[in-house]
Image (cartoon, one colour):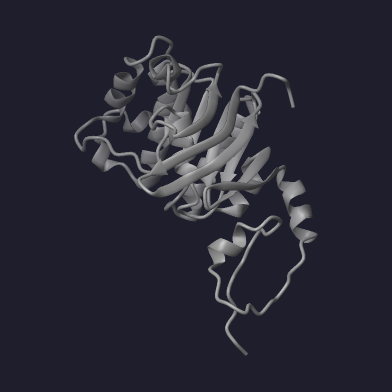
Length: 257
């Protein structure tokens, strides 16, 4: 690890009313690395990413993205990052080429929209309306728009959620190509195989906490060394309480036998 990672998160906290969605999350990302946040829905992955993107204000902790504090300098940050959201929606009658040119106009540094259309296989859809695109084509357009400013860091929030296997493989190919180009990528996913295939390192997130960080191989080796213990409690305790105990990775209630 270098002394100056391109992205640094320290003790991040994010609350929504009485709910603490992110609870002291810390990790760093190196330039040129694909870093994954892996966990179930509701684990706090999206909230963490949205704070890093400057879309939400943190309730605690420190964040640096490309040397920029997202809370203090969101306008400066937007020129350095690109992002796809869990669901991207554009006006039905907006044309594909128009969408890319529109997004390019938001930035001081841009890539050629025509080159992006070609790269993402959307040349023939240049004049198609957004509502005429398939799910896979919409996701490829979202990726093209996220790259229009040639960002230093690319955030991909659940990039293949809801896509069929064939389209998912197409998105994998695009991400792997970006990986070969040493593009810094932070992606969230609840698919273990996706994290293993695409990521250099992974942070496993659950109930708003990072419970493990490492390469996919390191995490698999650690999981192979875990110990399963079955206990009968004198008093009922929720799985959430048990999972907060030091050293506990997973807790579940078994049916009485």
